[in-house]
Image (cartoon, rainbow, N blue to C red; front, side, top):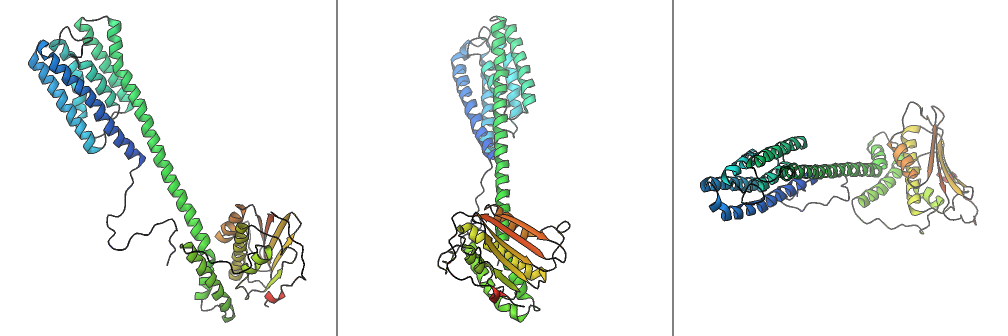
Length: 418
């Protein structure tokens, strides 16, 4: 059974169809927000157009034409608003082009329908409508098209206002330039908003990828040594004398995997001391089949922080697994020492070794030993050559002074098996 990452929440038993919740992306949420904003802005203008039309239809030179144009604008606007709300996007739909076309049509039409009211009167609502259409076109047209379209609409507006004979040309030009002014501002705002949403989505994808990579590494760190034990247990050619040690290691690995799956970690059975000596003693459990000799008396009493104790012990265990699987060693020595400011643990064997220039380090030595310890400020040096064995040296700084030895050192010969 493959361990499940602890951050994954199990689904309830039974029928789980439809239980997954899809979280919209930042881009989708931005588009939905724009699709809500656009109808709201158009709605404000529509209210003004309707009220102005009701008050000014009697003064129109052609009341029927004035009403018809007003009804057309209201109808197309309502359809465009409903379309935005239904599709949750302003970028799709069939009513954008008719809306833009009516803005171009309404400007010259007002010269005929409301003569004498083209400038400075909401009864001639064509300019306000054109400003709104140009601004909202920035939500569905590319920015360069928005600029050219709004400038063209501004020139068209200025031409017909100038033809009406009302107002001075500077004031008419100022009114006309309001069209591209609003359109360009909205285009810049929406371009920034959409770009920001895209960056958020990319950051989200990067975070998910990084989380998966970290979880994969955590999983590999958890099962790497366990796979070595399982491999030897399943191999019919594994010597019988090795099996008792492998079974003890399998029990330790099973407990580690259960902790990985979320079970409470077992309480330590020792006296709670975290020293180099207790670390090495825990790390070499189950390796009685190796020709192992401990020479740790000089550094046995060095205290270690809990994280360093656990990580260094795991690193020593990983090195010994590699020795068992690959080294064919006749002697394996674990040595510990201290100079008062640093501590050192060395695992060396006289096995087959490997060519460091041609053979890259595997996951165990590279990640589970070197990278993990590096994150805890423990330096690692790996030295090997074909036929000359392998030496792994781990060096860390003392956090508290090591107590003086008070008992006669015990040699590690009992751990050696020829």
